[in-house]
Amino acid sequence: MSKTKRIRKIFTFLLDLLEIYIPIAAFSVMFCVFLLQVLLRYIFNAPLSWPYEVTLICFIWAALLGACLARRLNAHVAFGMVYDVLSPQRQLIFRLAGNGIIIAAFCIALYPSLAFIAFISFQKSAVLRIPLSLAYSPFVVFLLLILGRTVYDTVSDLKKLIQAGP
Image (cartoon, rainbow, N blue to C red; front, side, top):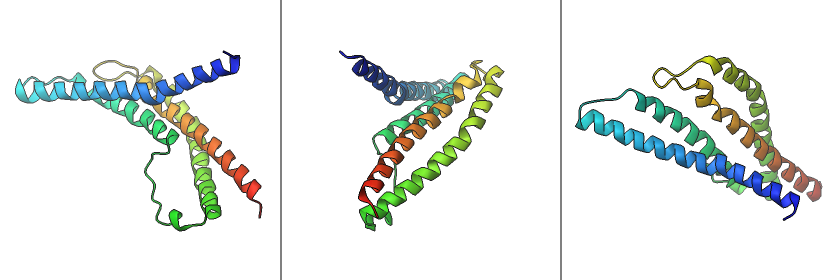
């Protein structure tokens, strides 16, 4: 196997890990802990304090990293009433404009998000004492993955626009 194929395979595995396997694990843990809390609270009248934290952290991880998979598969929600009636050339321009807004917003959000994660790195959750930076770090991963895919799509669309000409 060539070195390029090997690196590509490792990179694909890491993306799958971040976008598929971690969200599946987080959602599974969230669901089981939620059921446990419902069972203990309403059947045995013995509520626990830690399931709320676990559920909240798992939801953050599953939602943000799962959204990256939706972006990869282009399976996110889209309102295409106006977009669908446009010509392919104008759809391309709309995509470029939308992607430009996403790139600008995510670039602006990246540094403050990193600064916030660094700021809360010493704080721990109330019950489980989990570092809050661990709980909120998927947001930075979300920003980077969505930014990377959006830049890639924008470059592809720009190539198409240049090839199509005026």
